[in-house]
Amino acid sequence: MKRALSILAVLAIMFGTTNLMAQEEGNTAAAAEETATEDTTQQDMGDTAAMEAAEEAPAQEEAAPATTEEETAVEEDMSFHQVLKEKFIEGGPEFMGIVLITLILGLAICIERILYLNMATPNAKKLLAEIESALQSGGVEAAKEVCRNTRGPVASIFYQGLERSGEGIEMVEKSIVSYGSVQMGLLERNVSWISLFIALAPMLGFMGTVIGMIDAFDAIEAAGDISPSLVAGGIKVALLTTVFGLIVAIILQIFYNYIIAKIDSIVNTMEDASITLVDMLVRFENK
Image (cartoon, rainbow, N blue to C red):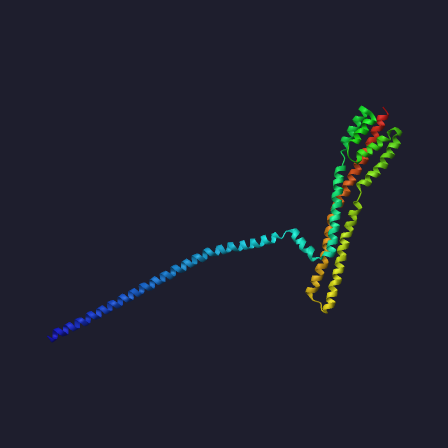
């Protein structure tokens, strides 16, 4: 009986130990599975984060040029006239206003002269052909009527020459020369004012620069020290008047040269046409 109980006790101990070992092995396996699962999850999260970072990197790279483009757009929004306006204000209203007035007045005269000269530009060949046809068909009176109906300095000179055609060719030539001088004066009217503004604009700019430099030195004297910011600011404001004066002079000089060239072209046309008219009258009288 005791032996049987001893055997049962041994079997119970062995069975319990086996169960404990199995339970420990199960726990160990479960722990290993959990660790593997966690590792897999972390790896998946790492891969996902890497993919998101890889996707965000081009987006950031694309965003960087966009920011640069936005900055460029902002810089381009500052157009030339806005920059010019800022510099004009920085230069001070005293001399900059005077320089601006010279530009406005000079441009007004230039535009008026250009319009007048374009309207006065003759079609001399057509006019001479009509006068010659009128002389052959209706005589001097018909030719004078053609001149009256034609606009421009050449027609006016021709009319004055035809008025003196009955007094001889010499009087026709004198009349053409005299009235040609009158027409040339009309063509050159107010042009001297343009040359005045061309000379005046940079001189006003230089005067503003000199006065600005004097103010800068006065500020240095008052401060008792040469501050780079103080000197640089004063010199910058002083030089802006010179820059604007030179810009005004350049603009007006371009228009002035165009006007002078236009006047010379019209005068040459008048002289050539006047010589042709005299020859035409000589042929008409010798018929």
